[in-house]
Length: 639
Image (spheres, one colour):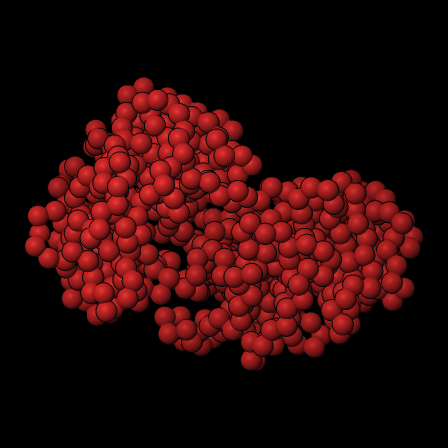
């Protein structure tokens, strides 16, 4: 093909006046709660449920809910996108461990304010927290799989080391009755060790604890699963030192998250039991299917509180049904993970973490943020549309979910939205997105489960959910990008893996997959490249545009020929998604520029300048171009 020139400055001048950039707001308002505890309001003495809520734009927030009044209060944090780690400590304080910046934060419950932020250098996640025998708060990290100790007097952090290479995760830390910390490392080489704060050293676990990855201290015992151990000797205690659920109803286990030093919570299928020190009998709170909800804490009234997606609940002893209430605050705008137009004037997107969707009517500006669309946690990576119905590809259950926004909502009964297909647990993350082929089938690209390299293409019938899985079509690499025509799928791969370092010793690839045989007909490796994509197919020219390390390559489908090199002078693609409306043009983001690549005229020009880096691009039914920049969404159209 001809060399395509990209005359940036001239195009900016020529088209800046012709195109209007309209800010449509920050439509993504999803909550993503990963931790919660019961605390006492120091001013009123009332119990409150405190939740950690994610916000990658304006920092995470603590949400304090008064369950008696169904009211909420938000306190914005000075750091962190979100938090898995929340614990009350002596001195009227909460300790919060964050991601993606890996800091410990101190929240004063009297002042109702954050008072300290302490960095753990080099780490991006602090997963959960335990108090050691020295009074320090210990947290496990990603990506160094380190144990860190926060001193509650000096607010300094000690790096206690990473004793289990090559693992990236220290996912679980549990305090033992004698003051040591049980540490569970993963995922490349799962390892469990004990850390002794007195000796400042890691130790092998005793024989009795082998196979135990986490637990909780209760009344001088260490509890894990359905087992109990004495103090620091870890001698098994059988029967356990508390009444247990009826044996005829099946296996049970200790809920290590809800259990405190005074009250133990037990789970048996859907049943939740409670036993406090000194009580005569085990008490059944309720036997209710939470359907993906999570019980977080018990209160002094014997109730259980928790969350399910965008809602919270309070379970009273004897309840037979779960009453969900919307979390009574509005979240700040969040990053739009993907952006897609449905052809009926609605713009769809979702958060980077949180199993929900939003849609925005581009004419009326009506905005809807849905409740959770699946019983599984995670997030939607991409959507496709058939006759106005949205089909979402979702992590972490490996689901394809059907949702008709024009029909009544009934996710609780799995009617609308409804999971129509699953490729999990083998494949869980839809890194390649989802598209509709000319045959009306859904094509989606996936990354393998945690601890495994690999990927798959799923071909799903929208009516029945019947799915054909084409595994590792270009080798044991994740599918990072996907486009289809009537005969072939055009694929890009990634060397990344869930819970694994970037794969070494091989390059990422572009390939053409024959859909009938499931075999590749063309493969091109790219040396020293770990990710190929995004990829988009233009129906007018029948050319495929492939992004490799930010450079644009073109594959001519009729000729089955890849260009000899990337397009000369084309500005780098730095966005997540490109768009091809089928008129010979491909639109993409290059830093803050929206760029149009004309495959017919062999020209490249800047269409508009946006206030921030362009992440996603889609084309609406009104022919306008819609882009997302972080949390902000814009319409770009002729004046």
